[in-house]
Length: 149
Image 1 (cartoon, rainbow, N blue to C red):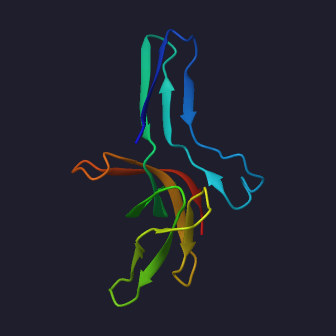
Image 2: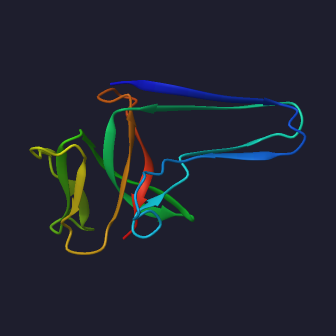
Image 3: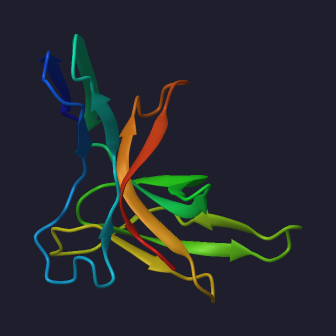
């Protein structure tokens, strides 16, 4: 899959500038039931040099999300997903405490999007983001868009 590296650099801006990168799909549901989150944030200094490096990949994933200290974060369980696939978030009630998990993605014929279904029986935050280093020990999930519970 394609990987993109973005580098932002500044020198002596004159004022501190906060740079926030987020993904916002072209949808009328934006800020209604679909919300972008800050993917990368940094403050570029008024004097001297500053930089921000950001890497994103075409490896998409769905994640259960939760709010931690005012920020939306992954709940630790996620699944890779490809365009044209669907997955369902389930709740294992036999575990104590109950644990959310994703079903294996399945193909949706004739569909050019990805789909996540909340099958937990209750509210659940779901995020879509990027998986870096897929199938490597350093694999990591970064949520870029969320549908809060």
